[in-house]
Amino acid sequence: MQHDHSILKMKPMEALMITIIIFGGISYAIIIAGVVPHVPIVLAIISLLAYGLMKKVAIKDLEAGIIDGAKSGLGAVFIFFFIGMLISSWMASGTIPTFIYLALEMVDGRFFYCIVFLVSSLIGLSIGSSLTTAATIGIAFMSVGSALGLSEAITAGAVISGAFFGDKMSPLSDTTNLASMIVKVDIFEHIKNMAWTTVPAFVITMIIFVILSPNEASASFSTITLLKETLIELDYVHWYSLIPFLLLVILAIKRISAMITLSAGVIAALIIGFFVQKDFGIEGMLNLLFSGFHSASGVEEIDSLLTRGGMEGMMFSISLVLLALSMGGLLFKLGILPALLDGMKGYLKNVPALIASTAGTAIGINVLLGEQYLSILITGNAYQSSYDHAGLEQKNLSRVLEDAGTVINPLVPWSICGVFLTSVLGVATIDYLPFTFFCLLCPLLTVIYGMTGFSITKKV
Image (cartoon, rainbow, N blue to C red; front, side, top):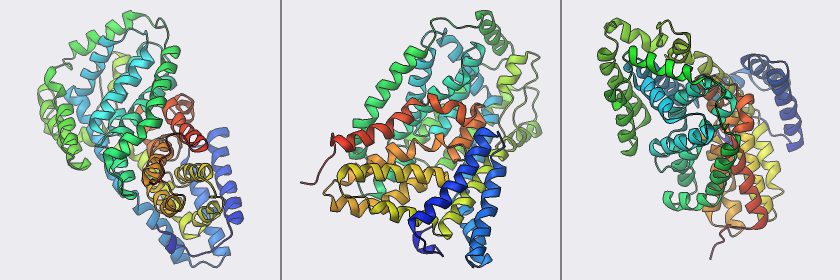
């Protein structure tokens, strides 16, 4: 999806009005009416098709826009499939149950949200993937939080804040590499420069989670004891069950491709699963990759924690992602997004306006397209020359791309990350959004720095 592929040329004000109508309708349907997001997005696609036909755009061009948009998400779709298989196989191998057991051993309710944030940050930093962090240790912490009777929304906010801190600052992260690559900045210089906004956001977030953490858990600790004893009785807790996770970390550090890394994690878990699930044959182990792992321990809490995963369980997310990206393809093909970008360029007369406009563009693309990679790619390409003209180092641009691009995607209900996180953590995007303090603070700090000039590096 590129600017020069747009069919229509329109004025920024017309594009803005169309955008307000489309996304106002989607927001009302999802937030106020509580409609499943697929429906308003399909209706938005129909509305955009009608607008295109009214403007005498050929139907084949409109269809091409939809297809081009969907194509941009095929990589994410395959990752979703692999993550679904990873979750179900890690359940069968005891990997996630062992994580749950260790998490239950580690926490007692005090400073719980802060511990969740710190551990998720460490895991995210070590493997460079926010989604994998949420799908592994995140599920474990959601289970513990539920057992302790604590807020699922705040727990999810702590998991996501930590996971995206790790993703943002890890040299293994694809978004970190993409942001530095697109503006030709050394990756370690990029990470060092991001620390100016990321470290304060991290510290403030940690303090907030300390304050929010209860002094005592509201749930009876007899429930925690029951969960641990049941996991032991089911023979799900083993040191060797952590081998798939260690393998995943090692491959991530070696910067092996995501699909190969996830495949290795799945295969290792399937092999270990034969030792943990003694009544599972080859057919049972292969079927759970599609249908997910189903626990039948007889303990309701355990069964609700462990029954999840599989490719089938990701279909809701995958269908929503494809629809949202198809809508984004139409927004490009009809010239709506390019017109909005062109309109914003007219206000780039000083550094504060330039930084704020860059952040606004990255956020807007996340909202319009639901894709964090495109928010980095499009914004980076659109503003490189503006930063040169303003006499600013390109590392300022790469920092804004992450501060307002990478961490915003999980806050959009129809985005790839938003849909995925809601699916694996079981908490609606709108519910966890107010508690993703790290993700909310990063764009705020980057705009404040732009206004004050603090840590903004100018060319010598």
